[in-house]
Image (tube, rainbow, N blue to C red; front, side, top):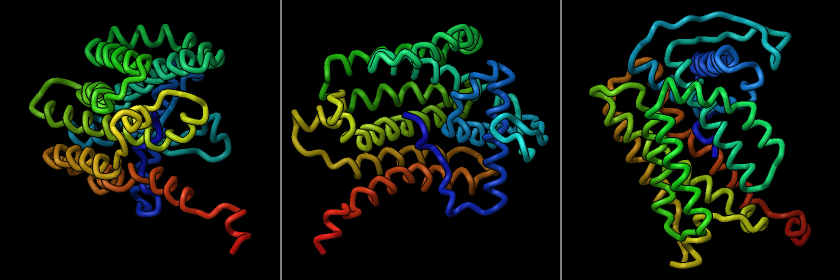
Length: 282
């Protein structure tokens, strides 16, 4: 359920692309420094948006540099890192820990179980630092697990559970911006959950896995997902625009208004492309 909150690369200016890459590399470095080099394998693009968002809002002191790293040993990569980056690194690892546990429970994937065990002590340390966020992760994933185990057709409940989880991760501290940050994270989380279910539907049905969209349609009939996705991301955008953001604002808008649709657009183009047999009939 990761990899949706990304930039629309085709519409990024060179400076925006460099800024995004520096924030991404800083997040990767922070994960390695705080949780060990192996934990860098859990890096996702999604938390880079959170770094850019919270740095724009709070303007923390930021360090920069250039370094080589195991994935890029030849050419040094520019990076930027702040206290916000460290927070996002912790949230990235916390989510990765539970994602590995979920994959183990779903597919009995021993590699995922081993990865979860490797991250376990790191997660407990993160929970000590950020109890409210980790309690939200544990609480809402328990709700989602129960819905999945019962093969629930309550699509709203599933989306809202993941939305509440993401909403709490967006709140670094309780202040006058908390409500809008929580609303943005909530709507974005619901969008991600629904988008993931829509795009994974065919694969889930093929492998006889629970899918909330399939369960909903099995009980209530056809579901037009596009208006629901548009409404969710639109509501998130309203909360986003209430925040007093200036730094990286065009880049943030690129991600929120266009980048979140990239995988959906690719999937649509792929599904509409004729198969080789169909091409041969023409």
